[in-house]
Length: 114
Image 1 (cartoon, helix red, strand yellow):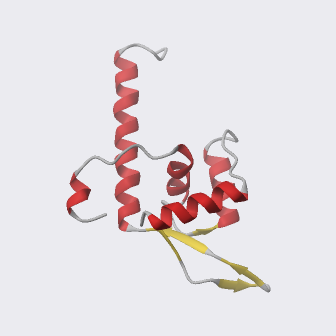
Image 2 (cartoon, helix red, strand yellow):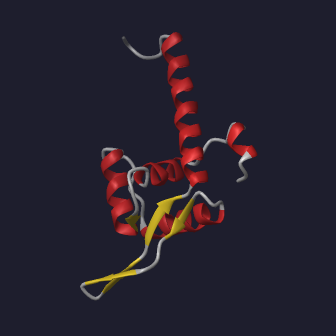
């Protein structure tokens, strides 16, 4: 994504991509940490299995929305950590703004009980 593309509206993110980027919004995490945070922030509604998580992480990396940090060893365990890129922060903010507009429209249409 280029600096110019920051001014354009991004296409909607896949729900699991949105949740992964949101999980990384407050700092880097390893795969298990991302799975746990997504489960927590969706109140159990979205469970990312390892295959879907790592496939999504690979796709998000290819899209330059996140990057893998250097592998760290802790107690003999090797963990890969992931963090948002600037492009990832822009895409996440764009998706949040899109969702806010959608919720505002639903409220104007009185879809939600007030």
